[in-house]
Length: 373
Image 1 (spheres, helix red, strand yellow):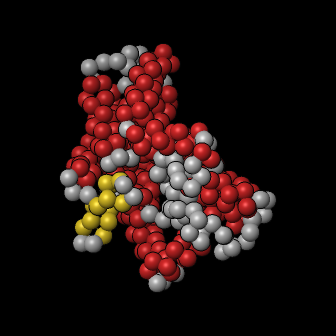
Image 2 (cartoon, rainbow, N blue to C red; image 1 turned 90 degrees about the horizontal axis):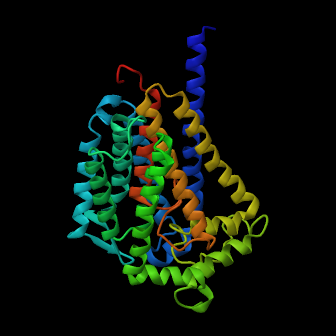
Image 3 (cartoon, rainbow, N blue to C red; image 1 turned 45 degrees about the vertical axis):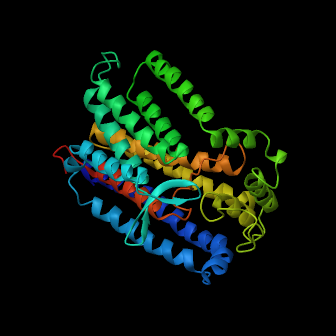
């Protein structure tokens, strides 16, 4: 076997292993969406399969989107990164005056009776633009603080503003952590990263104290038992679900918290239901899959042919990994609630499609050659 053949075979195996992980997570999610939502769906819609059927539909759309992206020339994706961001930003901006409120948030727009959360796609477009900008404009021999930084900071500021206005503090935090991670990856000096961090940290602290509901969430996080029947109810029920699972869980479909005890049991807090039904051992295996997602994603970035592809793969994998970590921390009461779903598993139409688009872009980036395809 030739050296070129060996390299191509290695790349094919890496890509197959990487793609198989979100696929298996998605299938696993379908199982637990049915388990977690069946009681609620039967009560509200008269059909225990209501949420499962809808998730199956959007799973198909997500898979198809991922496949179609593989046929788009790489240069069309990255050369027009700003265009994709402008489109995503424009659609997301419509939520400021035309939105469908759900649970107090205005993140969704309804088109022909179908609710869409455009901010999920804005996050993907922002990662695409950030990686493109950093690759094209950042030189390790020069300071990061140049005039070229002004439009870049302006774009991030607009993205943060539109997300916070919905409000979607969790997505803003996740996206900014991803951007900071990319700063380190491209080799921006630690001193300059500390300067950026010292500016961002007070801003986030101010955001917490300028909105009453964020301050309430923080106080609830610090002491949920002070109001066990009110503000602390959700996190307490989540902890009860996780604790009830113990080592091996109560068994598939045998969750007690899904009987109208734990709110958002098939969306933001599906991890708690999973822990209740399959226990510590089962959730440990689940988290291993996310670790493999990060591991094989990192390997893909190392074997990608183009520098901008390497950076985007790292950014995309970081984004999914950070969302996973934050969701698990919220469910276990280690950080305040943020309204973040568990990637590839939680029920969510726009989120699932956006995640598969991100996976498709990662695969496209990995396959790209120097000729732009």
